[in-house]
Image 1: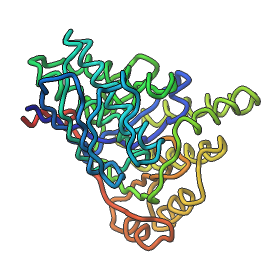
Image 2: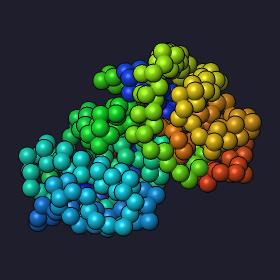
Image 3: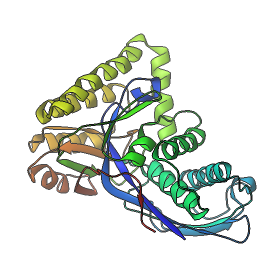
Image 4: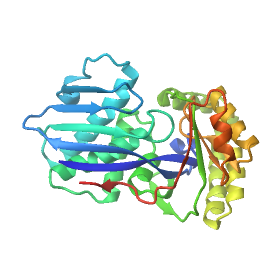
Length: 328
């Protein structure tokens, strides 16, 4: 048996624009997915997922070669929960050369599914790491991140970037621009996260930005402006200028709203945090629902979010300095 965990993430800057080769700066947070893997005597998968914002389910089937299992869970959640596990196991089979191996996989997660906190990346990173170690192989961090990215890229039909998986594998603050991924020096960041209880459909939101970008020159220029903003934000982060980081987060949120990926609940939470004195607040991830991230060293933003209509949960989160953890 092997057990691995990997952190979720928030975006300080750059979601959506990163899909088009612009830079992004995500930061790993201490909310983790933990995956336990044990080899089976046959080639089937038995997956137990008690969290991931589902009601919990257990299913045994032959993996992607048999199609999706027939269980009573909405199909978008099936694709999200099972597609990533299938892809991770196929990566494990490829890298180890054991094409017929099967596993019992148990997923426990503190990260809500589809909420913009990198749940799928964390599950994939932890699953690949645990399953390869169960077969006697330990991957280097760079290869682990790459194979996790290949999984997300396939499941998301070519619309994924390396940002989430690299950040989850390595931890800390990172900069991603195309295939160029590296860690950043970052000060302690006072993250406050608000969650509306929902989840956006990443594929639809990415497709919507793509459509706008193709139809309007100014939408394409907006995406490029996000990239310029990220470069300013990276400099502010490495200089330790948290107030400037917050101002640029506000600017980034406005550009994302213009691209149509915000939602009423996200706007309400962003403004509640700002009105409470947060240095900056923006949506994080694909948008359409899910989470916002604010910077506030005081308790005011968290308190305000807890009393904000439409905010289901609010919590502080520390920067996760360590990415994947090998627990057993």
